[in-house]
Length: 184
Image (cartoon, rainbow, N blue to C red; front, side, top):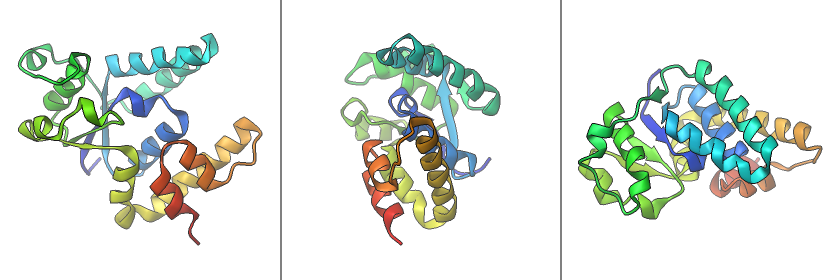
C-alpha cells in the first residue's frame, strides 16, 4: 500500500459511518491505516454505550478488521511513551504507537489532546476525518464517491431509513464531505 501512514484514533473508529468511510478510502489505496490493540479495545468499550449488543457488534467488527488489515495493528510502544507528553496522559499511547510505527499523521476528533506543536516535534501532523477526506478529494474523488455510495446504501439497508447522502454524512460528523458529495 502506498500513501501516507495514518494512525486512526479510537474516536474515529467507533462511529460506524465515519469508520466505514475512512477505512473504505484507505482500502482504495489513498492511505495506510495504523492502530493498536488498545485503540481497538477503546472502540469496543465505547460501543458499550449502545448496550451489550453494541459491544458484541464492535468486537465482531474488530475480529473481521484484523485479518483484513494485518499490517495495520501495531504493538504498544512503552519505551517511546515514557519520553512523550500530551495534555491528557491517557492519549500518550496513541502518540507513542504513531511515532514507533513511523506514521505521518494522527487522525482524531480530539484536537485539544493532540497539540500541533507537540506532534510536529515528532514529525507528525493531526487531521480530523472530514478535513483529511477533503484533502484527498482532488486525487481520489471517484474512490471517495464510490465508498460514500456504498456506505449510504448499507446505512439505508441496515437502518430501514431512506437516508440522503448529505444528512447521513453530516450526522456522521463529515459535513464538508457531505456538502461536496451532494453536489451534482
